[in-house]
Length: 196
Image (cartoon, rainbow, N blue to C red; front, side, top):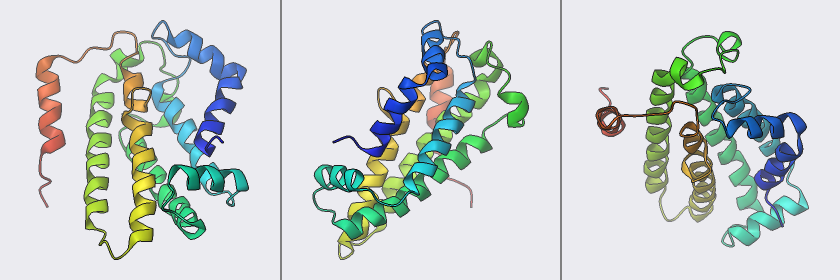
């Protein structure tokens, strides 16, 4: 049985506008900026995770994460909402200009927004690293929370950095290129300790 995220992806794939955008993407030119596509996808996921637990969703979660129970699935929904909201907050914070202007600049998206995309790559990678620290901080005597967080973190991380994840989509933009020097600088930013 499909998870809610898989069902949502099927709905998006069936949408004619989304399908057209994906066809155009083979040339590296999307009909919208990736920023807009991601924000719209996150808005749908955030709305979806706030729905009451359905039988299908519970079944899929309990099969995939057998250590969870119904209370754990509910806790997962709450924790996943926090994760998704955090992902969106980071996304919006990396916009180089207000969305109403940015979303109109889909032609030469990479060329126009390279620095913003690089900033987002760094910020989302740092975010996923912080989730691991959050999970490590949960004591073993709180197995329900630890299990719900594990499910949320793994699904959120997969959405961002898997082979088909958000960050991989950047590589398909027309003109995409990050030099070795830029990559090294980004790695330094990812591993840097915040000055606080």
